[in-house]
Length: 436
Image (spheres, rainbow, N blue to C red):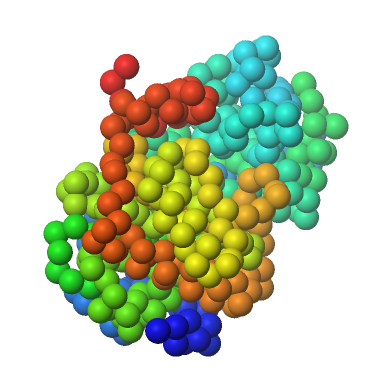
């Protein structure tokens, strides 16, 4: 009955796939590397025993990085463009807006300025303020350019996309700088003219989602998801090679337990997540939400040892996670709040039950993620195996025909977003999907 646990704990299937993904190099949305990663993932799912492994292709706004600089005084300071920044060169006074909280923009004059903000939030603040929210506060307040300053030390400029679904290319040039460069800019050039220059090629492109299946051919299904794309500046081991490796490892484990599945399990590795959840948004538009029993979205796993599951107010998801934790006497953190980022969200926003599966961390933000340091050496094979055991058990729990998790009304999701102070930021970034 429990021999499968030993098989998973000694398996190299997921870790081997992770190594193959990071060895590709550039997996940017719309790139040849992203497609290679999707093809490798399709083949790995088929080799694990999943059926009907395939790619589903869709159009995406392509963006290819060129050189970027910040000229200040007599020096050129290192920076990297934020994906989907327009190509432009802007000279304007530098305004250091600290954390770049919404109230910071209300109290400062940033019109026709180069605005610099940090990538974290203060301890006293009651919610996370996403990079794109800070960017669009800058746009709305008339800023001429945007500088995103990492809070993690180590000479690591952060990346992360701008743009909206309606306008994939952002309105003002945007770059990331390291904590050290940001400190130098603030100390030496606050109020002085600096020049932000971004070179990028903007072009049409294609991305793709990977699909495969296990279990009985039921209309209802449990989705087990991740994203295969990564930012072009690093290996993308944490974000999100580990998540895709987890999907493959779970598929490998479930292939040997297929008789235990009472509901079909669909594995989906999305493309173009890092540039606006494009792949999952495409899937959400063309599939029947009513047939989805639950979503297990792996994006942030293996970063630390203990799993953390955001449950978005679905009591049944919390109950299932707690049942697995109790059965295996192993901690699983559950977070009942909403998390409107990553590939579960195009479904959860309409009331589909979905987890965002990450791992616990005391750090604010992504840590090594979205930097040059997102590399394989930051991860432990042990953590992948332990978490795969728990998540495999969770998928079997969700696929039980007796495990009915009620969908929520979209109006209730919208109300929770208001209560949790997330609605304002989503409106600013163009991500609010509801009629007001």
